[in-house]
Image (tube, rainbow, N blue to C red; front, side):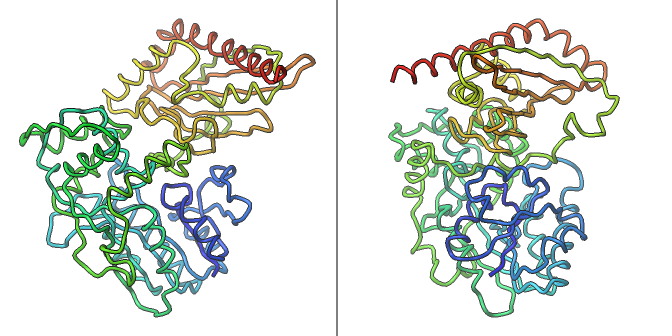
Length: 488
């Protein structure tokens, strides 16, 4: 089949594409920014089209010639007013475009939750999207899942970090709610299987694994698989839904605005109550402990394919090269250093920045900045990296986002996602010279208001020291790597 995949830059979509290719389907990926798929290992096997679900004309171009589509779009982390209305409009546009282009089926991954419960705003929006899609002329298969367990998944990262960071855990009410976790591998198998449904009717399936557990049991189960001691639990009934996301934001890589909808969805039990897809009944699927073990193996092998943070937390900001910045005040700091190492060794040193390697200079200062960022509701440093050396456009890298990366050209550009009074970027460019290579490092900052200007000048003396040391140490490490390679 000719299959359109939306959300291919996200956690689920990025893993679904290889499954579809292995099954022999022709895949077209729809994204607002095709550059974010440039370095995916399957990029040359798919067609990529730039389109936006809010733009009906681009949707028609994306769907032309397609037989079916996966709808994997949802503003999970959106705190902006009207996000539910935008999700509703996007789903309506998509359903109408699917009808105009004669698609045989739409597959949508939504969220579990009983209609009788008072659902959180985000979970209610996800279910409304399913209803809006089903009102269109194209048959819709809606899969409803709760907690998806896999390396890099949002739920898994929350469980993992809460358990590892907290040997003593507080027990707010939501920790006792029941859920039915499902392994990411089973989710992908189900997404692939339902595509072959020949009957032109709408279907709704609840999907979940064989275990029904409370969040407390999820964390204790993780501790058991990870070889940690059983966690001691202190009841905290007054620990409110409003306070919990802030606490989770400090202890895990999830910012409060991401943790909030996840926690709010646990006001009630989210378990399989409806029909499951044929052949994928809960008792036949991977257990929770098996799924945790598989995820930990992936992390240990640095084989995490996608992560929750791959999806942008907000629409992409304009880049410094965009016309919108013409005439805008922009501060910049440029550093140039030369290395005897070839350009590929210098790029290797640059591209390892962040994560376990750190920032080559005053890592304690970066840690303090990350801690403060989380304290005020930012993403902090805990997101780390998807891979210790490989980078792709769209990757989260601590409190940065990879905007552009090109090893062949020796180019890397990061956009800051920490809380700052303005917009900030960090970039590196490498050029070959007669006796090695030359590294240019650029820090760019577009201030917002008077406070943004004060922020730049007050911190500049500290930044200047850090940035100078960064470039020098990158060059030194690249030189040592090159000399070591020659001795071998």
